[in-house]
Length: 334
Image (tube, rainbow, N blue to C red; front, side, top):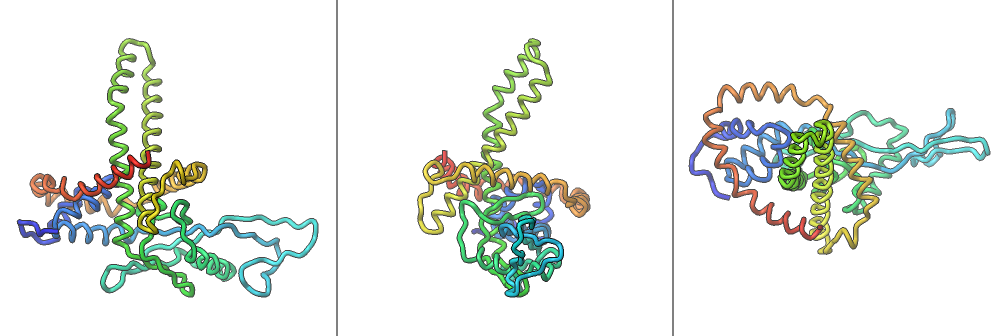
């Protein structure tokens, strides 16, 4: 990676890049702008480390837990399984067991992020949670992961590089830069595929508009068709981006040439995609905007001139490798 010809303090680059401040811009910032030069890399990583890393959440899906009847007790081995007396009229239910971790702190070299349980875990649940976490760590789940990753409003179920557990303190750590690269690499491909799909619908939309002008269709019908078409494109783009990621993971893990048509599970994929989409909808209602609005106001005052001159330099170099690799993966998946 080469240094930029013009020497400016990283603080200036940070303020320039912060103008790309929408959720849809984040993958472009990390995958493309970060690759332009050393100053852009340092500025982008600093911004993501300060603004987005504290909003990282890892949620591990640990199966189900059988709840005891009122007044019943734990088994003597304290392994988390409830004792249920043998009687015909007993009733109990299984509920999902999960463990969510939130940002806690960075290592001294700022390369490893440590996350802790988001709320105090009850003593009753600690044994079974510890047991399930050990089982999780001993298994490999690439196509059907047992976790989700949330960074502010974006959610997926991609890899967590360098993941390590501390079972006594209920703390996890990982390589946050590698995690962000995998996470935003999939987001970058998703936005690219969605843009291509929307572009292909331009003629179709013009035909619908012409039908409205000729009074062959009602305007509300056209709007509904357009919304349904966009929703379909969105679903397909998410699906294909995820398949490309799984294909890459399989190749990196053991050299397997994974092919969804041959090796994939369509029913499980559909279930996972729906679950992740629900989490995205929930996260869209979270309040993340207050600090961003303040930063945006400050940016508007100071770096309008910088935006015009510098943003044009941010475009092509870093994205080319990603596009080539993702296009090959996507074509193979299709």
